[in-house]
Image (cartoon, rainbow, N blue to C red; front, side, top):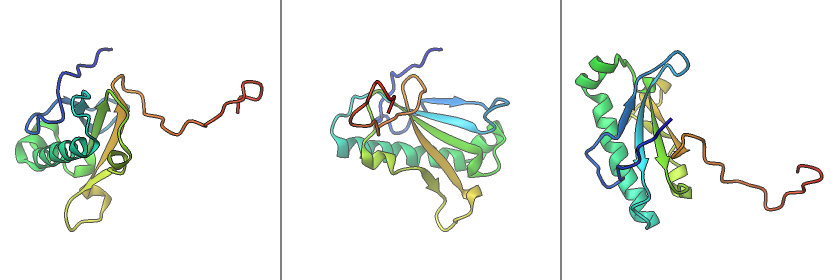
Length: 134
């Protein structure tokens, strides 16, 4: 499997990748690639926020809904594929919720993955005892 990480967070008005649902994942997956070109944490968060707003507006559009057969925001998930670990502030973004709505149908999940598609595991134990595997 190959992942193209040529896009950057500062390309706010570009959709990096859309993956249509399969039998396992029933939702449309929109991918944002964070190729590591923005190193300042605040600028990186701001760029991600702008890109998420763009994706949100695309998903709300009639063209997207018709093409991908989505009826509600929860039919779409956004994966942020990062070359370097997401910041703590980035990881606090777990959903995008339609203003004024608190129903699950009106929110899109946001998840952070490594460039290879595996989840980021950031809470490693400080010590590891090889004898006890703990």
